[in-house]
Every structure is written in C-alpha cells, then in structure tokens.
Length: 272
Image 1 (cartoon, rainbow, N blue to C red):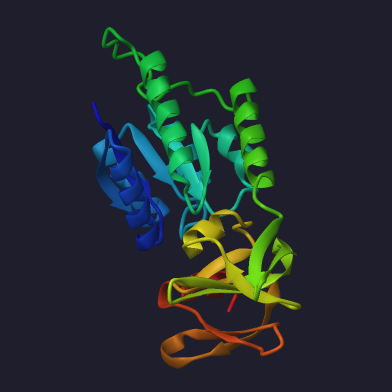
Image 2 (cartoon, rainbow, N blue to C red; image 1 turned 90 degrees about the vertical axis):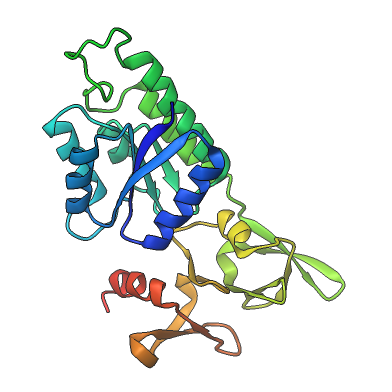
C-alpha cells in the first residue's frame, strides 16, 4: 500500500521538487499539500495521512509548533522534517520525527527516510485493527537511543560535505577551500567557480550537484543559474519589481540577479 503523504512547505517550488523525488521513489501517494503551519494542521486533521514532510521555517507556525500540536491533538502521522538548516536536528527528534532531511534532498537519503517510515508502520501499527492503539507510533518525547543515532548520522552527513573543491583553470587543476568560493554560475552547460584568487570550471554537471556538496546554510541558490556564498556578498542593490542584485566580493564586483522566488527568502534572512 502506498504511503498517504502530505507535503508542507511555504515554497511551492520546494513542494514540487519533493513531489517529483517521491514520484521517482515510488510507493508514495501525495494526497495534499500546505503552504503554512495553520493550513498544515487543518489539512492533516482532515485527510489523516500516514506521513507528513514538514518544513521547519514557515510563516505563522513553525514546523516544530505544527508537530507539537499534532502530538497533542491525537494519533500522530509520521513526520519527516525537510529543511536547509541542520541546527534543528535535536529539536526535531524531541518531537519524535522519523527523520530529518537537508535541502537539497538527496534521493538516496529520501529512500532511507521512506524505509524508516515503512519499518515503523510494520512494527508499531496494530496488526489486529485495535482502535485503542496509536495509528502514528509512540508518543514519548525526549531523545532516545534511536534519535541519538539519527543525530549522529546527520552530523556525519554534514561533515562528509567536501571542504575543498577541484576546479580547472587553464591546464591546471586547483583545490580551493569551499569557504573561499564567492559564487558559482552555470552557462553553456559549464559551471564557473570564482574565489578571490582563482576562477575555473567545475567537474560537476549541474549546480544542484555542486550545491549538494556544500553547506546549505552558507551557499544559496539565488537564481537557477547562480549559487552564492552569503558571506561573500558585498552589497545588495534594489532592482526592478522589488527584486535585488547582489554585488559580490570578487575583483570585478560581479552582479548576480536574485530570482523572484528567492527574493522573499533573502528579505526574511536579512530583515529587509
């Protein structure tokens, strides 16, 4: 039986991307979506899904506030948090989340999360249809051994992200520190990586692949063709239709556009 699933994220594109990955994984039916915490609670109460993929930072109620209300109000659906920030891992498992995925979501990690949900369903749901048992797994809070194991996995996942990148500059291959990267841009099927000292091409085929190897709290996909280090932004310039241009800290003070979808995230982060 397919996992009846609800997707909760205030960014429609993020919901669409996750929905696509779930479709590729198979065995999942997305029965509803929600764009904020209040809408999520109403939707979850109405459709009673097996599984909820829940963003952390949302307007109104945060993902954790939604999760706590779900636990308080009755048998809980299983929860997998999906976020660009890893500092919330401990709090996620305090509300008994099954897993915690970092954006951009890796298909392999998504498969692991789905396997964990299915394992809980098979072990924790009553086989005899006992209505008195919980339909959503155990209600205990606090960090147990399983939660600690998952936190350790998350830390290891972050530490496995490459601290150095290889770029080709002329006939040479250079190793540069990831933190020194100012921005990366895609043009003509080639990715250019720029640091203060060097500029070269990356062996990664897409910006998605490159971004997956970098710290998501530092490197933002501000445009479909541009990935920037937010610590290397020199100036933010208002642009047409309330959008922005980023002037970076490289020698040319390169100007990088911010897409309409990422403009809101930039405003929220910088309190613009």
